[in-house]
Length: 342
Ligand code: DAH
Image 1 (cartoon, protein in one colour):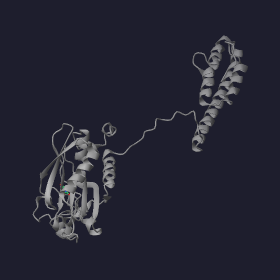
Image 2: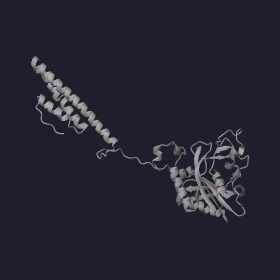
Image 3: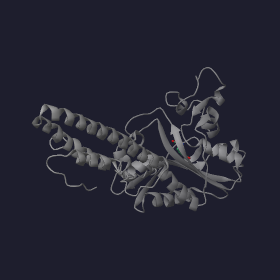
Image 4: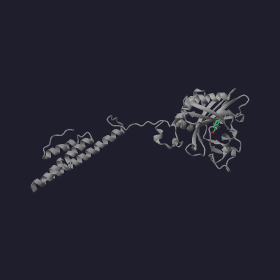
């Protein structure tokens, strides 16, 4: 916006011309500039004109003051009217979604998957290529599916309510076998899967599991994935080869394995697997073994004809090794400084 050059001594007609200009303002910025020229405390035209009143005779002063007050009033009213009109124009444009290519938009933030679901997708991809189906069980199981059908003896310490989240009072309520609980491992999905599918079968099931444990390496909720393969003539050699192939894809080709015998009621023989990765120490990462004949029978699968293996991995455990994450609680705290690194 450009202005006419005004004399140092403001003349009413100049002020009046400037007020006329107000109605052609295109923006609030333009309006602000005119109002500054009129009203600024040091050099505003109206301010100076009012100051000049003192140089006039009382009679002239009275006439001039009346004239200036009328101009001031007109300037204020026109300015206020224009300000409202300009503001409305902006909101109308926003409401009608008018594209303003001159607007500076805030930088867009792109979210991404949390590292656990991202890793689960990778696990599904690797096992998918090895012919494994993906199953998602329920997070609420019963004493029967979490323990009985997996061949846990009645007095097995894992059933202790100190470690398990039972969903109603263990002594009262439903019959013991139907006692609902938050699953303590993904192994019950084996039962559901074998009862609804006929062998040969291969499946993995990733998901959340719950145990009453909480410190830097244990969380009351964590993730596991289980794998199950049932076929004819399956041996530990198949299991070892599948586990090592998958682990090399997921952790890198330089992972080393150590196999130790271990006890899990639903497999026989049972093994525990430790891995060592890039100079770190040995860390237990999975349990595995040949599916116990009792478990197959609980699912109406003939153990003389079919056999197979199962294994279960802790997902946080694998990620902690892979990324040198020192504390399991970091996965669920939602601290962006942690999450943005992955
Ligand atoms: N369910 C076991 C746990 O949570 C892990 C496990 C061990 C799974 C041996 C298996 C297995 O399938 O064969 O500690």
